[in-house]
Amino acid sequence: MIGNLGNGLSVKVLTDQKIADINQAALTILDEIGVAVLHHEARELLDGAGAVVAKDNLVKIPPQLVMKALESAPKSFTLFDRAGQPRMQMEQGRLYYGACLESLEYLDPYTGKTERYRFEHQSKIIKVFDYLPNLEFIQTGGLDADVNPKISDRVCFKNTLIHTDKPICFCISGDNQTSADIIEAAAVVAGGFQELAAKPFIFYLCDPVSPRMNVESSVGHLLTCADQRIPAVCLPYCTLGGTAPVTFAGALAQCTAEVLSCLVMHQLKSPGAPFIFGAMPAMMDMKTTIGTYGSPELSMLVAASAEIANFYGLPFYGTAGTTDAKSIDAQAIMEVTMSCLLSSLSKTTFAHDVGFMHHSRVISPELMVITNEIIDMLKPLRRGVEVNKETLAIDMMRRIPPGGHYLNEQHTYEHFKECWYPELLDRSKKESVPTVNEKAREKTMHILENHTLKKVSVEIARELEQLEQKWRINAGLA
Image (cartoon, rainbow, N blue to C red):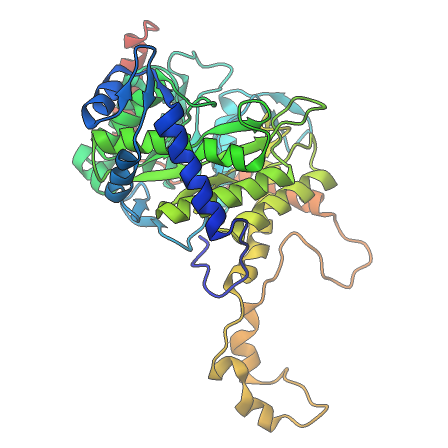
């Protein structure tokens, strides 16, 4: 866990006036241009609260509804681990990095080659994630190539729930029953729905479709989570010049409007339910048409979005530890370090996607291991310089003559471990040493072969298996 930002280095992308202007632009978008809401109950909630709902599902949300939602949304809350112990405190100055469980392809650390992602890769990613101390949460989906798509997101979540006690973010498709089933599975572990709401260790990622469209499935899951008091993230992923204005300010204004529209619906359904502001405004590379994951623009705009979330008093969900590189090379390290640096020095609360490569097409456990060290390397920057009587060390200096040394001093012994010492990087005097890639690959394989996961009890595992069987029957697969 990364602690409070304290007196360390920090970055500021936007001035207070720029944030105010973007906020005003977002309110104008909602009030005068509107957003599409393709969910019947959500439209009814908005209509009953004073929004203007047109026949074409376009909804115009007045500023007073946004202000009311911002007032009711909690400014801080806690995410717990599977055992009910506090794990992640949502408040200003906290930062938590997380990984995603799956992608289209898996980069095998043994062969160095990518292969189509399959269910067997899940346990490998979970094992590496669970071992690494600087990765605090994991995001599940349902992209497994050999699991029926009707239930793949639920099976993926269940498998993760069984094998790690760290918090889980679930990003899902399908109808409302999908989120209800996932919450039920988590409630089995928590000991009941009320216990889960009191100490949530799961949270939902809602992804509106840019520009300005709230689709039925994601809104349905959002409202289900609000009703059950399960924390929810709204994270628009837009591409500048594609699904958002190409200008930075325009993209930030649109993303902000999209998030605020979700916030209003969420708080109308259940005032005071925990909500997280998210955004991923990525540059579209006009040479290749991809949405870039390693561009400086994405890192900068994520940091800017974190400042906007902080303006509203909400925790922020961004991204870091990603690269557009196809192999773990200099490009990968450059892009991962840049994104982690900006997240570490910004107002970001969550930074997910650690281990993604090739604009999120590939997931690499080896890159997760390297990024864990990069995150660790950035901790001194967040801590800054502690200045007090002990650290100034004047009394000790009185005893040391000019030309002397401090090696034998108790003060040195008590404080030298406050400096950062690498595991993968080399500072030795040896002329020939393994490369970072070689060390990371060796460590990754060691984790895969030796790390023991904290599984749920046999009784709970049996209940979860029964739930999966019910999902298969309801989906017509058994």
